[in-house]
Image 1 (cartoon, rainbow, N blue to C red):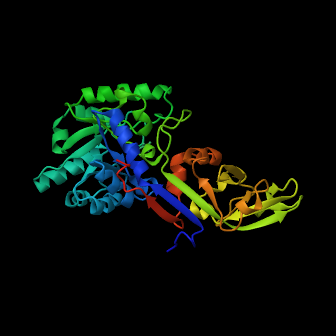
Image 2 (image 1 turned 90 degrees about the vertical axis):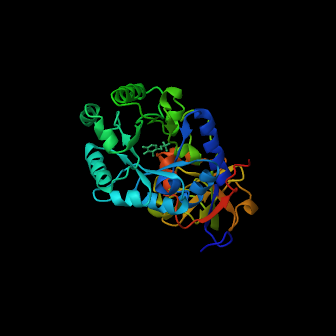
Image 3 (image 1 turned 90 degrees about the horizontal axis):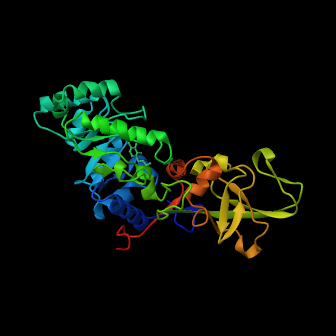
Length: 371
Ligand SMILES: *Cc1c(COP(=O)(O)O)cnc(C)c1O
């Protein structure tokens, strides 16, 4: 185990901000309910800390991707609804029952297996039904939906308690697929008996009430990702990543820095080496593209990101503010998750879920959101 003194980098996760973000979304969508998506270990931030904080704040419904994630969450949250987006793998239905996990049924095949399991068990158990409206990934395709629409008994047999769908382009409000999916989902619901609906992810919430249904499923916005790309981020930042300078060296033109000699120092300058690399999820695409901040001074990543180290140009900083031991913000107030993602040519989701295992993790806030 690391402590903050010996750690090469410190990852601080503010649970109060997670809770404040959930409350903001809950208030925005009311009277619709606000669940929380905590798959992939709460987007890398630690479901073991995040989910109990959200539950304490009043969140009663959680979504994970995989059965094993649901089992881990069940041991933390004995009371919560835990919905598993992938649904039952063949032969795993009993696991759902034993641990009171709610399967999302994605196909006629999953519906059938679940219905047979329930019939044999002789006791009902709720499930969600995922209707594909344009993602073409999970969920009943139109021909399978038509089978269900013609035989509503299948819903009852499978214990379907709500119907859901997932938006493909919600982060692009002008994209025509949003409205197309909304209409396809409305038609699907009209072909089924009245059932509560769940539709919007984080960005979908900001498409407006027509996309909310009876409950929403935000993930990334809870963790500070901007659900409205191109506009000011309405969410509170949750993550701060501080890397530590291990060595500083003076260099003279025309010396090069790092593997592949991809950066050439322009004049005389100083390079600070920080103990964070691609093994920590500091993506290699940030080579010659990322930025750190020391206070409010930007220090660009120069040269390639290597496994354990990055190199930053600190030439313009006073020597005393860039000594070994100094912490550099690699994700922070001046370079939030989405800015780092843009520099890396990816999305905030990938930056968060890649956050490494070597960081000294600090959780701040008691999860009450300051309330
Ligand atoms: C991951 C996921 C979400 C959450 O998406 P965000 O964009 O992170 O808010 C919601 N619904 C489904 C089906 C998902 O797979």
